[in-house]
Image (cartoon, rainbow, N blue to C red):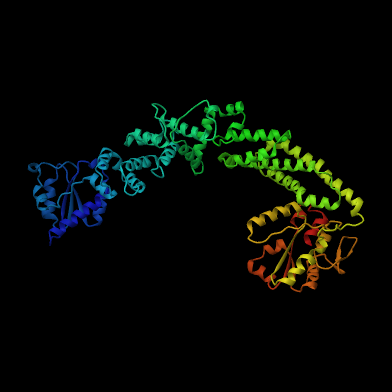
Length: 608
């Protein structure tokens, strides 16, 4: 309420009525002075040139002297912190009378407040009068005003008061309940927020509002706990047979309860709800219920973390015993992925086991397949199917090494590693040895397979002839085919352009110098004893030589080290490739990672 503005308007009106007067005198008899912060009022009046004179039981004559003899120039608020005396007992009655109809300020604070808040309902005035203790505090009123909706009704007034007292973000019943439960005391009826509400209004108003909104029947004791338990129960049983639960709570609006929990778990203050769910999980013996009924009846229940633990443990055991029904578990895991606990507390474990399920599926496919009949079938089997085993094995190990809470899966990791190294890789090596002996030792290139030595002629030359666009070739030595497929899949999702992947047969022997030389234009003409490769009679060792070979076929070509190029400032980097048609970028980090960095081979490779 803005008493200051009301007072200032009264002074202005008195000055306007008494034309020619140079001052105004206003009396304020205030029986509620003990509850008022008068310093703020006095400071505001002083800023407007209005003096404040406080009456007491002994200074009435002094006041008369001040106003009628000592100071005839300044306006005054005569503030009496007591009820107005009877006329025949009022020594200053004459001054009060000649001050006119605007000479007395009567603080109908309820009316002032309602005017400030733009409230005009009689029922609202009655409620405010009955709860005036709440509205005496300016800070509470400011918060109250911010929370009020446009054209509020009596219920909005009550809910805005509750929101202020429990520090809620809005007057919505969901926010009120969340804020109350978040205070010290949690679900207890001795909750700190409930105590604060009870100081200024009937706490039953809060309970009645929340119970009606969530369709909960009232109880005489533990009322707040009963509300929360009912809401959580409705969330837990929304897609679950209620018969498995030893407790039962009724709500007329179960879907509102479910949505409330889902929304709360998405909010920043979900930690409070997490604690409640864990508490009720133990209170209702959910772990024992799951052990009794198995996880299957709970597969669509996302309320408690113990369900995720059980699902993960069952899947772990099935993978160890190689008894997983892949399609069933893929469907099950897709269902669990919707849940809060999956996303926030078990994501790493789920991701690892989901990869394990995929690995198990490809393992079974590999073991069922017949031995490839020839080298071309072997090539297509790997590039179309078996690369997934290498890819999944790498991803599984990366996840396992990266996370710190996956130690329980060490036996499963050992089982996967044993199969990968002793069954899968051994089979691939056997296929390779057989085809080397039968065919590749006599004729390495396979028909109908793109050859690494044809890279420039097949991919680069046609582009040079068909377009003036700049062509980038990034050569990442040691990049496995399965990683190339992963990059291809990511690019296809992220880039708004055409993306293709085409496998090629590498040169033999497959070592760095020869592989890089094979991607240049021209033909390999010689390999020295030290491994140096020559193309069209020119050494391919070092960037300078590779630049010469590239520029023999396209003068506007350049070869650069990728790591050095990407570290250049933007303008300097653009200057390097300005006007170039073909840019070869060599990326050797992978190759060096798998070699001993102290060896001459790796140092030479990195320098090259």
